[in-house]
Image (tube, rainbow, N blue to C red; front, side, top):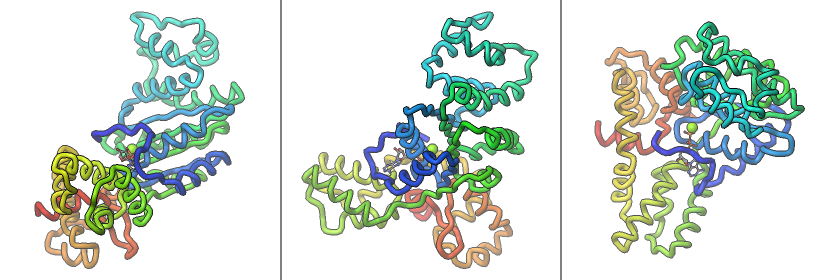
Length: 356
Ligand SMILES: Nc1ncnc2c1ncn2[C@@H]1O[C@H](COP(=O)(O)OP(=O)(O)O)[C@@H](O)[C@H]1O
Ligand SMILES: [Mg+2]
């Protein structure tokens, strides 16, 4: 993904979802957020963590995609837990010191209580054993300090390639289920990955309410004093279907085009600006998908809607049900009200239709 989420949203507020999330966390209930790619999961988590911090509550944020080996993940778990006590830099420095693990005064009591921390470079220790201890560490540390912890695992269940057989996900599921002082937040695209989690409240993020986005866009444009054709914002939101990222991108591209040309872009032009801006992303997605012809046939058929899809793809002799399920788990499809699937990304759908 090209843009990093910072948690700061210059965009549209998912007020209702954030409230539900904060209320659950406050009550100590773990939550799983499920949504396709780019629907705002990470942003929402970051906001929730930011707002929950303090008042004897620590937080930790773990991205499972960028920490895809046991060693990386162990390091990040310890670092994130120690960050709450401003000891993470000492830990990282100690990890990088050549030869033995240099224990600073600040770290000394922690290492005394959790000796495994100083044994990272010990080749005799199995990396999964180390990871197992590291998953427990944030919870044990906060409970020993009589603190509450809110710990987020982002991209949970999205790493099928780096987690063969789901070994990592199973370990996290089993261990976190036993942690009494920690409230967990899991986020990912794959609902079946979060189902084995015990007593977790599920929040599905969908498109945002169209009228809310239209009103918000009108206000934003008014601030820039840009003259727009009637129904311009309606057209944007009808195209984006209420996808927050693309709606925001359309706003920026309109401002940009307006400052270059002195007028708002035509709808068709605007879509071309979006395609240009997202060219790298879409090509990367296509590269990932085009390895599997089952996925491609299914996606192309879905650009014509979900009705009769089995019948329409009969001649291709592919497993459509499996393809749809996998594409959902990969964050490309979402269920629609007819019980079928819809391509979640409106720009990808447009691009597929245009290039097929
Ligand atoms: N409510 C929103 N309004 C506008 N833009 C948003 C919103 N939520 C997220 N974004 C932006 O959309 C992109 C994807 O968001 P992210 O939180 O990374 O989604 P996900 O984790 O579901 O893939 C980011 O660039 C982010 O800044
Ligand atoms: Mg994310």
